[in-house]
Image (cartoon, rainbow, N blue to C red; front, side, top):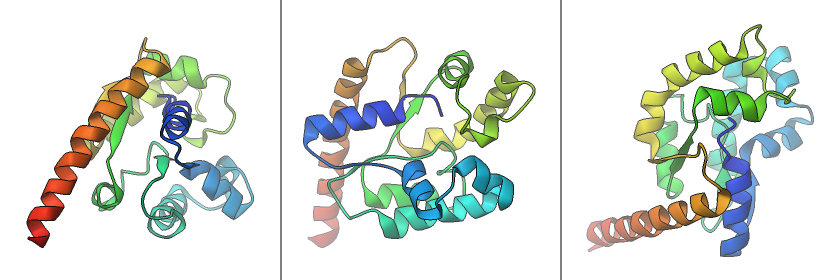
Length: 172
């Protein structure tokens, strides 16, 4: 959260003339309540199950730029599921940057804490090893969206070529 996924995703979708989907927004539309409220009424585990369903069933195959919630890759099997759907790029930011970008947000249930910076550090410590295995990573601190978009485009073209070659090898 707070790494720039949604802003960058919208920019890339616009540049590539592709649809843009944000899994958090899709889920909120489906459940007809804010994620924060869903967490309170149900549980984080119930929300993670919705995220999995979203990736498996609600997103059309191919040609879509997707911004995924920060915890989506955490449950077992989610990294492989995402990679089976396309190129995965992980955006990283320092805890200080994340705090600065999210401090006025009321819709982040995992930051409901007396010490949000400590909570961010705790989440990053827990999640970072999984993020590192999820896809190519980009640090967003101090970088503008155009620079980040160019970096993601380079990664996408490199990864897409590798994916196409791997698929051709399997079929051939």
